[in-house]
Image (cartoon, rainbow, N blue to C red; front, top):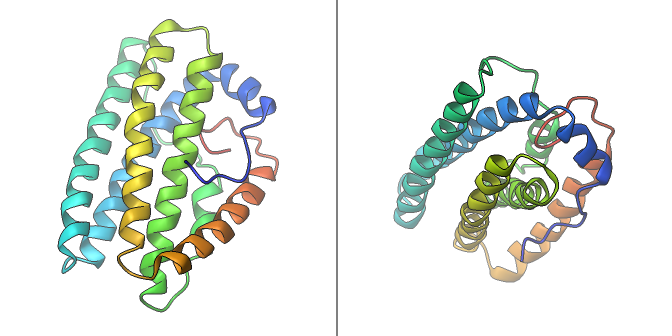
Length: 191
């Protein structure tokens, strides 16, 4: 369903479970970035009625998730602040083609891949962390991320033929898995 070309490694699981506070802070930043991505897409393609409707829903949901993570941080006495991000998103965005409609397709597919990876990572966290509150939290977020993933793929198919989108998704998914193979020293949601 998610179209990912690799599974999360146990090395990542160990790294994040040993640094849950940092990962929670990063997760808040990820939700904020996801809302910003949807807003940027809405602004770039504001004549596309279906895209605008879907992005409006995603923006609201991502900001709700951002607030939920901030509440979790506050309840745990963890100070939210700036943090060095993983290179993941930046590296993926280098793959975006410059001419339309290819640019729209790539932006939507990359957003979809990021949602797919988040979905997969939330399932891994749900299954591997000891904290029951966080296990439930990540289990609950799983469905939403999967839905966002599917929305982005569906919208990409409104800009190009389905077979072209599927082929490009395969290429981007391979690149995404190679980006994650680079050793990340920071415990991040997408390291």
